[in-house]
Image (cartoon, rainbow, N blue to C red; front, side):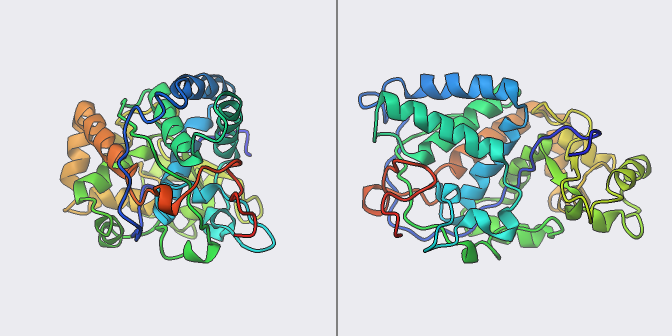
Length: 326
């Protein structure tokens, strides 16, 4: 990692179509009797981790989105590849998923298994940890309903075509959102997750090499060109999605878009496209409106494709199905 760039993680906020059994009824007090210290254990685990590794919040938010993209919010992204199956996390599009995010889920699961073994799903751990970490870095509090079960499938070959690329158009992004019941306004609100995190140079290199995109802020472009000059040999080179307040969850991402400081083409297009520009303007001028809409969209995202008792389980380890031959 370059000395120039601190590490925060790219958040991609897109959700593919999910086909599953009718979702279970999630409730905020699901573990009240079976694991009463659930919330306390999650909170007390994420707090020191975020202090030690400021990358954790953005990384976990990104991991949560990637989980919900594919098979719904069922912890399928946490599964490790084995001799029987190449899992989602080992597809090329997931190769940069952050280690700190996997680590925090593992830490929480370990603590919970000591307190209430076999009770709390990895999917619920990821959902709750994401909310707690978002609020820790200044983002809005939102309710996390619980009761998800961990899915039985994680297939790398299903990733392509379900995760958006960094140069997608608004219609392409919207088609992914609409399949899952999200509106254009929610697309923009969730894109505001890019207020924390970073993107690797390869994701935006076409905006600076061989010629600079004239719609990119010239000074910003100069910094990026210098930073990414060796990106083809150093794959770890990365830049902040929000170069102004990269470690704080705020509305600066939207203000940056108006100034030519949107890093990805798919960021910049939100201001350029006439259908999404009004929402960018709204959130740039009104952080409260952004926080309210982001919170509602996150609550909604957390219900996408969730599994119940009939089509899920509570994994003993988050990176393995209980039936290891699956």
